[in-house]
Image (cartoon, rainbow over all chains, first blue to last red):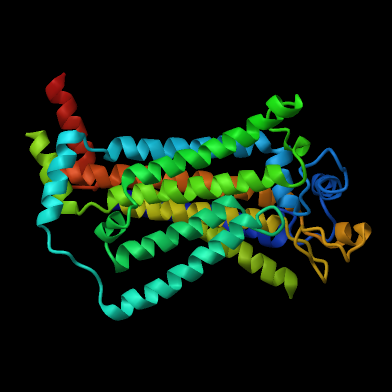
Length: 254
Length: 131
């Protein structure tokens, strides 16, 4: 108990100190009227230098895919590693999967009532179109592949809650399909990244060599597909009811 | 007035950061730890965006439009660098979130608890037996 008090008081003191420094001394330099030199460089070079940049009037996208391209590429790689780590922790082997299928078949088929289902159908259509708009215009407006993919994952989550995992699986959205689609998105990113090397003799990720906005558009679409189906894969595995997992896993423990 | 508002928002965000650290340190439930980690991460991202803001009156997003002259654009647009940094940080945060949550869920399925003290007992106990 005494230790908790010490921790709380020391956090409070540190917070008060920083609050004082920020509010009265303005150590972060907030609320200035002029641009920092680095920001000015990016703003003036992102679009004006034809042939050097990735043809995006949106400066954030230009920075992310052109000046910090490798950072963004390996960020996709980190996301891939996280999905694969989650999959390898949650996966069941053949025998356990068969057992889980049998247990699932015995369960009564549950879904929410008519009002929720009808509303979800309407809302999901809207979310999907908005997410596609966010992702496909990612090189012209705020947003991009990851943001569109996250919105799309929300639509998938709504479907999971209102209907059930089995409805989706009966429509053909099985684990194999989602993983294949995820791999397809990653393959598109890889192809776009390597295309300048093989087609134009440039360097890796030199997407300004590709005609027009093709490079950025392909990267956005690839990221969109990858994020959407990466999330869906995790949701599909987490969608297996808890008690089935427990029965299957605990039996293995004994 | 505007400087008061800026200071107010900044102090609130710092309060959220410290609240996040406090929650991660003091709660023993793993899910609560993850939630507080998210609160902290989002507050820090928000601070980054705030640093890029400029106090000029018609302030534009860093998107070049045809009807603007170049000089106008550079005088009015906000700093794009913090936004680009946050864009990366958000994705990494999400990846970390997925991984932590799945580990917590799987631990609960295998051992029936996500309390940090119980986990220390379970892991320590098994280590002693095998040693």
